[in-house]
Image 1 (cartoon, one colour):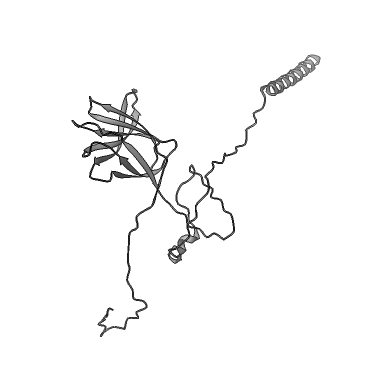
Image 2: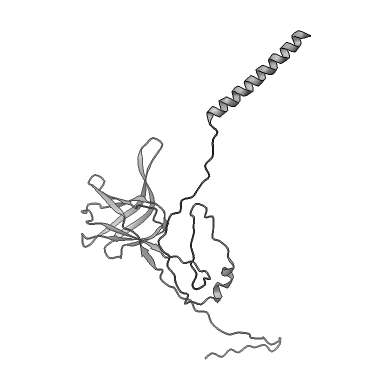
Length: 235
C-alpha cells in the first residue's frame, strides 16, 4: 500500500475524490493474409540488379510485406520499392516509394500502411553477389474493426463506398467508447458483393423529330411571311 501525506497547514484541506494509477500496454495488431501476387523477375548483369515486378489482381491496401528467400544462406542487400513511370518524352524511369534492406538475419518484414498500388517493382542491388533465389512475397492487411450496437436475432448489412469517403464519421458511440467493456464479441461479414450503381439513362430526342420541328417552324414562318407580303400588295 501507499501512504500520501499532504502538508496543508496554511490552506484549506484537499477533498480527495479518487486515488488510482494509470497502466498502459501495447497490443500487436492482427493481420490477414491477402491473395498472393504474381511475380515476374529479371536479373540484370549490366546494372547488377534484380527487378521483381509485383502484380495484384485488385487494389490490395496492404500494410505488411514478408519476403521469402531460399538462397544464399547469408545475404545483405539494399533494395527499393518503386513505381514504373514514363516522362513526357516517353522515357521509362522508376519512382522510389521506400528504401528497404534485405538481410538474412532479419524476419524480412516491412510495413507500408494502406499501400494502394496493384503493380509495382522491387529493385534489389546485388553488387558482385549472385542474385537471390526463389523470391516470394506475402502480403498482409491490418485488421480494422467497427464498433456498433447490434441487437440479437436481427440481420444487418454493411454498405460502403470508397469514392465518396472524405473523413471519419461522427457518431454518438464515440462519447461512450470508454464505457464499453473490453470483451466485445467480434462478428465477421459474409461474402462482399459489388452492387452495381443504377443510373438514370438520359433520353436524347431523336434527330428525326428535331428536323420535323425545324421544318414546321420554317413552314409557319414562310406562311406568315407570305400573308404579310400579300397584305402589303393589297394596300
